[in-house]
Image (cartoon, rainbow, N blue to C red; front, side, top):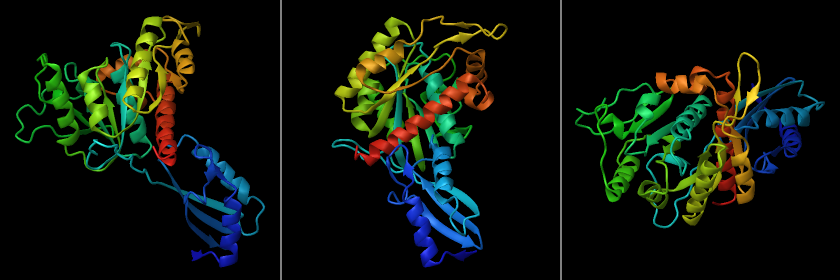
Length: 355
């Protein structure tokens, strides 16, 4: 394969200059996303570097590139190679970056039982499936559930002299205080101790090189959530709610807390949104429907999506196999995939805006 001649290269770049990144609303050429162009007879090979491997609009960008080059001499065959360069979020004053981690995503709720840990674990696996390097930290110190959700035994590192270390599962590096506690052991700690533990989970664990670190926060506006927001450069937070009024009300309080802490809120997710009977196809809104979408609209934040009630989600959590991995064709898995990609895209937009 030989390099494109100057004239052909300029012609191709000029055509591609009209292609915009749909999220960033700027030319892919001016954004530096075109990394290489090569030609052999009528075959053109282009290397495109995305801002995230989880880009939700990759297919749109590809279609626009092909349309821009359609009919141009020497472009009978267009071969696209995709890469990604995930940039780092910048710490604010008083915050300490987590070594090796480019972006931190918090998953939060102000009410327990809405499926926050399930969503956090599945977002992590969904991002890892795109090729991103992902970590997941269980910051719910008094109720660590992630070991079970990943099929890892409680207390698996209890006898280790090295302390907590990430355990890789489904492409995700997982850390939980549950790794140090035998099954059934309660954590009876006051607030300051919980805040200190959260800081250690972030800064004393060898995460290695990560594009995204997902943090499963405990429910409520606790010391853990406040410590996390004040100590670490969180790129943004996903708020989880169920459709009921009481859950939505609590979710709105969580949004207000993070806004006061100057943490961007990516948007709200409605879990347990509806149920479709497998035998009849009839849809039931068991807990109501649309409350989270309405609240997001009132608050002026994005509604990231709704996740239905499906047995595969519960079964996967109990068996230690996240639904996006164990049942990728389920409606729940598809919804979570979309949410994960939208969050990754939102980070790119915020970085473009200088946040």
